[in-house]
Length: 461
Image (cartoon, rainbow, N blue to C red; front, top):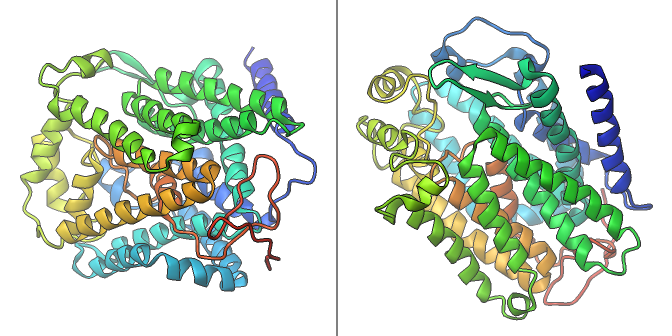
């Protein structure tokens, strides 16, 4: 039965790619670099796929890494940098247009100087730069809109069906039993249930964007096939989120998806300022449910309690640690040594994050880091709104991922390297340089415009 299910899953994956095909719609070969990066970031390390397991403690697992995994990311990072070097003319424009992002990464690198273990912090910073490099490889593609769509398709069409297969027919690979809670945890191709929720949320939002684009492209002869493919993936994503019991991902998918859908209405398209109300409304609902709903009725409707599944205890534990409030402990350096053991003794053994992205950033980078993050959010929203004014199809994806990142980070460490949420957030806030354009707009694509005037330019790869 398992073998038959595996064959049918492979056929389903092939069918999804077949339904979504469009003749003549091609991206550069270099786009596979960020795809391979995301395939591993969104699932499980290469060493785990190959069953190369080492006997290490929870503390060692956080501070050490597998040489095989390091080599995998190093190869992709080098390939990404070489690709960006060939596109230097375009990349230079992106870097100059995104000085706030450059400043944030510069401060992250500077904070290595006061980290407990500068070598480990440096390795993590290099991987964080890799996240940015992968986003730039996508956005500097000759056809960036199609490139974004292809990345979501390749990751989603592969990982979501495989997750369903693992959960239903290979339970030893896609689930585990928690003897303490006496429940079965489902994690599919990832390593933990919340990570499965993130994967499904990330790919689900990408497919929702493609579905809406195809629905509105009535002149596109491939419209129905594309809608079937992405509609199938959306259903699969929702099922996986519910199966993983990841209420944070489900809430973010619902709120960010609602922002994306409402952004297709004529009212919002004609009055882009109304987009602010959508984003503020989604964020307001999340904040009310988490911190202002004294009765906890909204949380209880999601199967959670007022402690947010122990998160309030974790927040108290991490805030009890002595750190430099201005500069923090250094890039990705809080969860080391005595602090790690102290937090475990005050809350839960095995946790490796503060379960709040803003608090996590404060612990590592202090108030300076939080200020720079605030600058990224403000400028990122402004960039997304400007793009929405020029092209609503492109802008609504960015605004949705910005909304998702902000809400998700209220109860999870969303602003951390090597995370689909962080990569989606970077994709959302990157500004498009003035004068950038695609070669020629086609059904389902968006064209980057300058001042509302389409420009057709030859892109040198």
